[in-house]
Length: 283
Image (cartoon, rainbow, N blue to C red; front, side, top):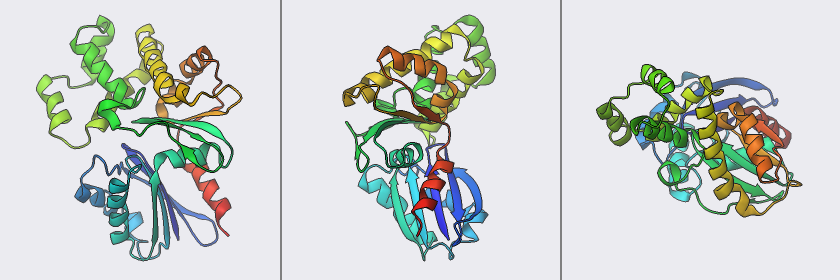
């Protein structure tokens, strides 16, 4: 049995494949970002999913691609946790950027970007992933991500920069008490997920000029810091992965054209493409 997992900060999608290359089942757990989630909680999120625990001794290989797994220390934390549960499995842990590459372009050169709870980008030359800079996460980076927009909406609301009608709807949908917000940001786990939860508000009001302006602002920042430094032309395929890119594709494509680039495709969830990639690799 082989397990393939695409793990974001908000959720992780798992697919089990049997020896005949057939899908046995798929499940979703809470996010498994080892950079922001405590080790005990990471383990609990896995062992509380009975479908995974039921096959823990039958799994002989795991391919886990996850947010927060781009540097050795957190990747090793998750690897050790997985090994302690799936004792007979060979564990492969890599960053979610690599899953995005495999899901989007397979083995062909391309620019590949993630716009979900967090954000990132790379250039894949057909063999190796090239990064211009390491990601420092939701506090300092993550331009145009869910947590970026959540943070922006909260700031706009508290500084009274949000149009009144939208502010009223925002207040109806969320608990905007200052103490409650600060508790979730500074005392509770997964503050990046908490911030990203506010971004869902934009999906329901995507046709409002104010929301469009915010989205466009975030996308311009993303291109400035995460795409333009690669100095590629429109001849280079450009892929985006994640819900932010998926739901606001029309704005994304317009911003891309401002920089003389074309969006090749947008994939909301990479797990199905990732499954096909790995099945093709099985002897």
